[in-house]
Structure formats: structure tokens, C-alpha cells
View 1 (cartoon, helix red, strand yellow):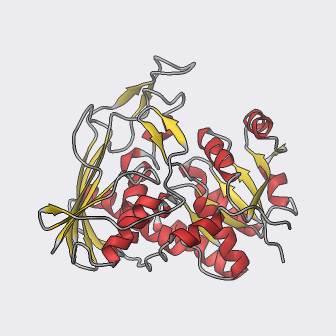
View 2: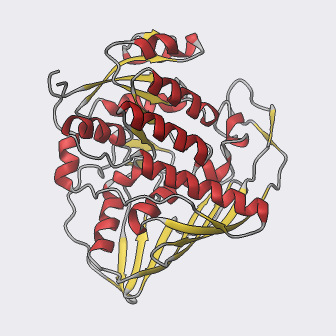
Length: 381
């Protein structure tokens, strides 16, 4: 049996570089090739990373491809993942997994019938900071979590992204684009969500591209760009989530969870690292020694040095296939996150509380030893 699984990438947009660059540090995976409906995009990305470029049909038929990494735009996630499963390949998809629950259930049923795995980003929940937050909750450091607040707010992607159109179309918007990071982390920390209620608005009907060859061109806005929601968890916790692309500046923390014995401050779940802080009632409390390998900064962005271990979820899925265990960023978990996100949007449209129909188990925690195994030297096939 293989101990290193071959990965074929479909969708050579901006995010593909991040996956290909980070993948070199992980065990159990090796990229076989890249593909895109735009042959030039595939050729460019393949040349950048020394990989063969091909059309999607050829990649799906390639005998060395065990897992298809689906990095296409959200509107194509379902169709591309379906084709990959029908071709007998496991699938790991960029977030959001799908755009509605029915699509997700159809893919889950197809995968189960064919004995295949489905995984999906975000995998930032596996980062050192979020696993430390998980440890603190499980250890009872703040008692029972009763409520929380989450804020993910900026002024959108059009200032820096050369082709931001899809952010403002169906499948985009701050809830489906950035919401997966926050909801996935909340679910891995607190468990499944039972119901949501939300309001939404669309203050601007168009956005102006600020960078690249299309600078100055306007793109239409078709989705809500400010959403405020309250999530009721099965545990009883109530968490407020505010996601907006209509905010120029704010001083609100990305995530805070309030417990019966204290408060847990969790860093931005869009990244793997950051500072975790905990109080025992009103006083700051000490954190345990936490030498977790998915935490040290390894990339510099505009905000400074950050921890970016994108591909950890894909590597964990490959390792899980080899070992015969459940992978952490699994289909059941991803489907529940999509269910919560789409329920938020539906609530804002229907002006009513919406029940979340799916449930999932909290993914297994990823301690330092398990994370180190994901990063060990590659094995031979």
C-alpha cells in the first residue's frame, strides 16, 4: 500500500500557489500535476513549481492521482468534486465545501458508495493557537462556555485582488468567503450549532477594482456584504458573529469566548498562529507550555509575520487514508459548517430563526506530537 498519496490540483488561481508552496513541508502527499480550464494558467503554475500542466480531464484520468485538490471558484466546487469522485479519486476542496446542503449530501453519498474520502478547508483549525484554545476549553480553564463574539470586518478584496468578481457573486460575500474560518473554529471548539438568526445588508451595488490590469473597472455586487448573526450551539452557548466588507477600520478582537469561570481570547482563525489569552474571572491566567509545530511564523504579509501551514488538512487526510482513521477536516464537519453558513444567509432573507439540520462530531484534537508526524520527512512510495 502507498504511504505517500499522489495529489492532482484543479484550479490554478491565486490560492494554488499557497498550497503548492506549503505542501513541500508535509509528509504523505506528493503533487503529480496541475490543471485548469485555462490552459495558460495551468502552464504558468506548473512551470512555477516544476509540475506537469494538463487539462482537468487528463488529470482526473491520471493513474498516479489519488486525491484531487479542488481549488476552483466556489460555484464550481460541486461539479468538479463530483467528477473527481466519479473518476475514483478522493477529494479535498477549498472552502466553502459546497454552496448548499443538498449538494454536500449528494457528494457524501457518492463518496460513501465508492469508498472514497472527502475533505475540505479551512484547516487553520489545526494551527497551534486554535489547538491551544481547544486544549484550554477541554481542560476547563474558563469553565462552561456560555457565549462569545466574533468579528471579521474589512472593506473587501477589490482593493488588492486583480479579479475580485467572484467575491461579490453567489458563493461569495463575507459569510461564505471568510465565515468558514470562524464557524469551523467555533464548531471545533464548542461542538455543533442548533439554530441561527441573522440580518444582512448590501450598502454598495458595485465595487471598483484597485489593482492589476483591470484597475478602475467596476464589478456588480450580488450578495450581502454585511451580516450580523447569533448562533445557538447545542451546548447552549450563544455566539454573535459579525462579518462585513463595509468597514474601513475597527478595534474589535476576532474571537472571544466567555465562560462561567473566565474568558478565552482566540486569535484570527484565518491564520494558524497568534496570541491566545485566558483570564480566570477578571485576572490574566497562565498558559501551559505549548510547543506545537503548526505555530511558528513562516510567511510575511502586510500585517507582519504569520503562521501559514495551509495544506495541513490535506496532509492529515492523506495520512488518515494510509492509517485507516478519520481525518479531521472531514466531509461531515465541512457539511455542517456549510449548513450553518447557508442557514445564516437564509435567516437574513426570511427574517426568521432557522434550524440547522445537520450535525457533526468535533474533530479530534491535534496535539504537538500528532502535528509533528504530519511534518516528518517524506516516505518512499
